[in-house]
Amino acid sequence: MNSTTRQKWLRRKRRIAKRLRLRKFKERATPMLAARNIHCEVAERDRAIAYGGIGSIHLLARKAGLIEIIDRKLHLLKVHLPYHESDHVLNIAYNILCDGDCLQDLERLRNDEAYLDALGASRIPDPTTAGDFCRRFESAEDVRTLMEAINCARLGVWKRQPAAFFERADVDVDGTIAPTTGQCKGGMDISYDGQWSYHPLVVSLANTREPLYLLNRPGNRPSHEDAAEYLERAIVLCREGGFKSILMRGDCDFSQTAYLDGWDDLRNEQGDAYVRFLFGIDAMPNLKAKADALDDSAWKILQRPARYQVETEPRAKPANVKQQVIDQRGFKDLRLTAEHVAEIRYRPAKCDRDYRLIITRKSIDVNSAQEKLWEEYRYFFHITNDWQTSAAELVLQANRRCDQENLIEQLKNGVKAMRLPVNDLLSNWAYMVMASLAWTLKAWWGLMLPECTGRGRETRRQQKHEIVRMEFKRFVAGVIRLPCQIVRSGRRLIYRMLSYNPWQEPLLAAVAGWRTRAVAAAT
Image 1 (tube, rainbow, N blue to C red):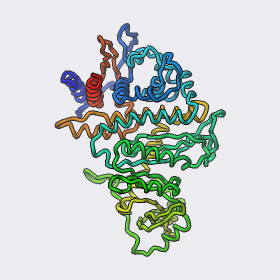
Image 2: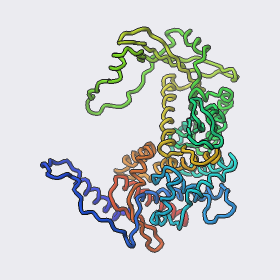
Image 3: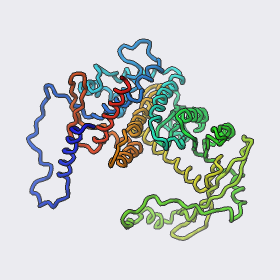
């Protein structure tokens, strides 16, 4: 960011800080919202958009090589009249970044002249054309080609990260139910909970919360179906990306003991296990018997870290209304009193070697009307090929996989990638991948944010981490939804920001850094 731009931004920051500073007010005779005599006019020449941050997203897509890679690898159109494959893919992703919930919202953007000018387009695909493009994916291989094209650009983003980024890739896997009320959705079926739905599989990188692979399946398919294939694709991707080791995590549905020996055989140059896995395993009667047979000395107390650090002084907690109702009505109340962890060697039936079985024992008091009835134990099992890490730490690592549930929630209700707007399994799968690209671009925005030197270095690192971790709605509100005037000046396309936003400083730095590097690479 040049000094003139920075001074303008700082002046706006000072003005809003002055307005919002703490001060003592006198009692007002009129409300604070005092605007009146409001008129509306249509500008003759000036054009502006509400989503000024979309320019930085498009610049990022060019910087990462995403546009070129999609057009080179994905071939669904015989002729480009007038759109290329990348136009269709980015059109759906940009629609979601600009507060679009469904394909029909494309009509709003394609009738916005300033939005078209902001992207240098004379027109963009309408909702019907976008739906037709989704239906052009005629085989699963077409959808996988699109995912591999995105992953090819992803490798370029990863290569720009610091060395610490590549210590270990945490790959999580889970399934989720995507219900539909449609009558004619090809491939839908009844899920385990009685809903007409699809059952997508999500394989993601926990380090950056990026969805690496999505697989759409009928609603009645089991969670683990085809999971091994896409986990192996994720291993290849992370290995090509330069990660020193990989940890795969999943719940009880993904233990897949038939594949454990093959994954354990993958070694690095030093002969150590390159792929480590940590999967939940069902509490089967034989495993419960093994846990019950353990001596008391085998169990160690599981110490969980505090959820947060109190920086000032502990606050008084409000009354627990739920607990009061439970006690008053004499409901059965289960209270966790202690957690212990132990480990044994265990060989699944489909394996030819022993693995480490981590056992977590939860001690639970069963109460009613504030009286203890009895105590019971509940066991949770995890199987792993990690022989170095302590059992307690492995339990905590397995629990961190729960963060993938937040990613899935963002894909379903933030990005709305699982709204199923088209008519069959393949086309809805393609839409999921294109819509989830909006979330991926958010993650790349944080990863590619240029580093600062000097006093702002730590602040910039916090901003990068915050962008990667923040919810999609907040990212759109802070980085994308910026009112900008669109100006053509010579060969330059200028986004002139019209108001102050705290995220403008990193955005301006990002655009300046990406433009400089893009020009340098082009020359």
